Length: 244
Image (cartoon, rainbow, N blue to C red; front, side, top):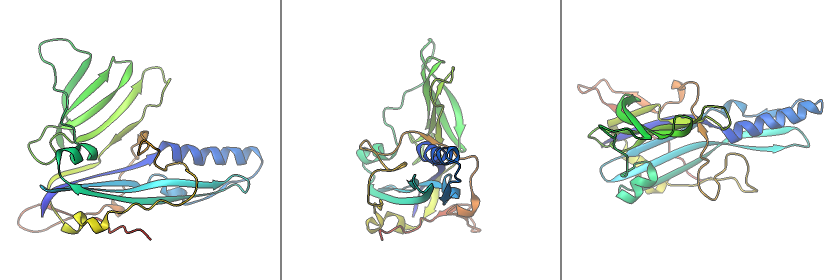
């Protein structure tokens, strides 16, 4: 079937900070920390799919557990999939905004915005700030399934008093061929390890809000393949993540 595919690879600042804190504490005690799976810190990935009737969000999110007494830790990926009908309410939950601001014309405004391109998608980027402290959000303005999708954003401070974090899709393909299996509700799972909340686990308010983009996309893990058919379209396939 035809639909939209978007992908973002990221690391979570609270997970990275927890690993660095463990290593610093152990070094101060004269012990070298041993962290398994450290290479997974920047291997978080979100894969977003939308058809005319369904929307699906697949996450692989870094999480960290540690034993400070033994100076050991383990980074792993927790998988979650949410599959819903493509109603206006559900699309809002998945990242589309139907209250996207419009760029003001002919007058000055604290809400500054400009036309831009984000992941090869036509967009507007809106600055919700005063130029010193605030945040910027970019939205698709294309007339396709990506329209009004929040493509990325960042917050900023000019004096370094707060974290300058950013997030954004690395790949956005509004018209691709998608394996219908990604919209199978049987694949909608939540697999979170038991025990007390650790770095990277969802809080009561949902996903951690501080997300940084990775330094690069790892093509070895991209689930996108080019077709050599007469029409140059893309086949997007998601892994089946079932709870163990």
